[in-house]
Each structure stands twice: as C-alpha cells, then as structure tokens.
Image (tube, rainbow over all chains, first blue to last red; front, side, top):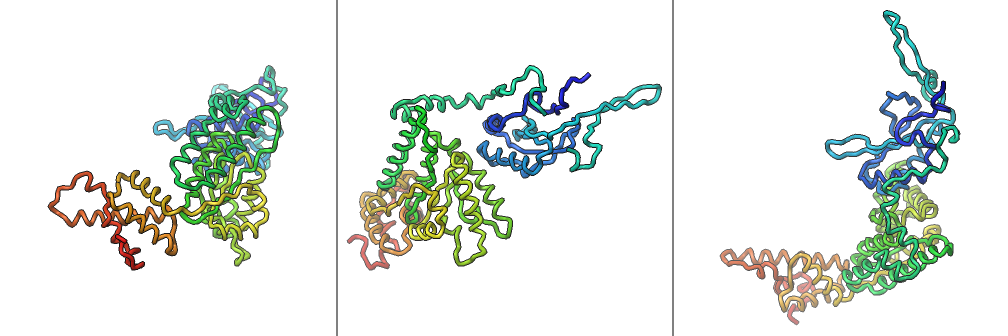
Length: 144
Length: 324
C-alpha cells in the first residue's frame, strides 16, 4: 500500500501542498521578516527525517530587510544545487526561544525515490524497524 | 514530482499569512481615483510639509521633489485605471557642495517613495566606495551584492560615487562594482532605488566616462549653496535642538562671522556652521569655567554670547573687528 504518492518528502511546513511559487515563498519570507526572524537557506541530499542539520548556503541573513533579497539567495542556491532539497528557515533569536520557527522546502530533486522500511530480526524473534533513504545508497553528490 | 499526484489539493491553493493582509493601506491606494485620495491615503503630503519645515532654503530641490512626487501620484492613478506605463526609473543623482543637505534629502526621498509604494520598506542604506569595492580579485562582486541585498526594498545612497571609477588605474575593481550596480539598476528597478551623490564637476566627469550609468539615472538634482541668511536660520535650528540660544547681540556677530567664513576655502555649508557652533560652545564653557564662585542660572548655561563668537580666528585672520 502506498500512502504518499510520488514519494514526496514531507518535512517542514506546506510539504503536503504543491510546490510553493516564488511569490508564495516571498510572502512567507515577508511574514518571517515581519516577526524579526533571521532567514537562512539550507540544502542537503540526505533527507532522512533525523538529519536535522542541513548544510547552510551562505550566511544567515540577519541584516536583510526585504524578501526579494532573500529570494535572490534562494535562487542562487537553486542554481548551484538544482537537484538537492533546499529549505528556507526562519530563526527567532529572542532570548529563551533561540530556535527555528519556520522551515519549508523550496526545491526538490526531480525524482524522489523515497524511503524503504528495513526490518531487522533481533533476539527472541523480535523485529526492529528503521527507515532508509534509497538515495543514500549512492555516495554524496551522486544521489539525485 | 507532479502536483496532481496529491489528491484533493489544487495547484492554486492560496497560502495565506498575516503578511498578506497587513498592508491594508496598499489596497486602498490601489482604488484611489483622485490626486487627493492618493495624497490622503499615502500621507505623502506630511513628508513634503516636513521637508519644507525642517530644511531651510533649497528651493530648487524642493520643487524638483514636488515634481517627482506629482509624477508618481499621477502614475499611481494611471495604473489604477489600467493605463499601463512602464515603471518609472527613479534612480537619482544629487550634486552639490558638501553640507548642502544631500543625505537629509535622500532620507526623506526614501520616505516619500515608500509612502507612494515605489519601494517596499523605505529604509536608506548609505555607502561609499569602501563598502562596495573589494581589495583583491573576486572580492568586489560578493561585497557589492551584499550591500545591494541589504538595500533591497529601500534606497541605496552612494556618497561620492565618482570614486567608484578611477581612470588612472585600469585594473581598479571599481569598474566591476559599477557593472553589477548597472545590472541591478536595470533589472530590479522595483526592488531598489539608487541615489548617487557628490560634487558637481566630478559627478559630471563620472557620468561622461560611464555612459551606461548616465542613461540609467533619470533625475539630476542640483543642491545650491546656502546664503548667509539661510545659514543663520540653520544655526538657530541647530542651537534650538541642543537647547542653546543666541544672546541678543550674538546673532549679529555670528552673521558677520558667516559672511567672512563663506569666502574662505573649505567652506562646507551646514557642516561648517555646526562646527562653528561647537567651537562657540567650547568658548562658552571655558568662559563659565573661569568664574568659579558664580552661581550659574539656566539662562547662563544656555546662552552663547557675542564674546563666544567674536573670539573666533576667522575675525583675526580677516583683520576685521567683530563689532564692525
């Protein structure tokens, strides 16, 4: 049984929706800027759900005031890594919060093979389950 | 992956956020039909009035800014009625001697453009050559782009822009900065407005040697030097801001001082006035300091007397007695 058609990666906000248009991305960035959050662009080719820390593209953008500037960065990242997962994060630096408040995917590989379920038989015929990204069978940089 | 593969979700599903509804005035501006409505909704008149009130003199500058504001208002009305015209090129060139108010006017320009919706944020990023041009190969482009990104949604003010172009050194990195600047000025006109500023003659040479730049800057605004009377008015405003006043006879002496000072080299208009006032404050302080046992009233501490100005070197150098 397949519950997620096309194996689309569902991490972060809006991930069950169709890909956001640039205009929608800009609107979301504008929202984050309005809250004084710092935007960042991150990419990876290892989208395992437990892989929290993706590579950062450029510096975190603490000093930019306008969405078009951040969209420029997003597009530059898409150009460099057209076949990677890319997400935009919004970091709230308020003391006591200091964590990412928004995170959404803005670029996906053309073909997403998805994850396989691995069963491991352990003591007492017990079964342990884990997920495994098919893409990570290949070395870094050749995955998508 | 194809969008249709997710059941029940149409491609045009709107993603609503607070940001979309926050700018209610922008929508009202989109329905305005008369000049009065645009002015009322954009509150641009306030800024223009402020400009008139706060800045002394500069009549030609104020007129040009009014003209530009009028054009922008009419353009807004045209767009509302569907008369499509190309987005106006708003890049500007401010020329004038030092201290004539170029930066102050640029700040207000940013506000006007923001109120009329031509820039989204309305902040001003003031830079000089150092902020744009790098020190080694490959350093300039990222540096310039960084500054441009910071200025997006607002106004980029490049002071003494002619330093970007150094013809005597053909390997100067300034040229690279100019090229990136030109590209953004042309392609992302609705993202930011560039204001160049500097001395008149050097700006003219700069534009002659950079025809690409010259053709992309639509508005050239000349900042005239202030007259002595205007300078006196400026000095009164400056003193008022700092809680000082002229003694009854002091402003005459200061006016004579200004008359002599404007003829001397390196006169920097309002900036020189500020410096002269700062020196007068020093003299006032040491005058009061010398008199140890005197009880000082608020008036004593506030007033700059004729003596504080008459002691200036300018009078001695000119061989003029301050009372004449």
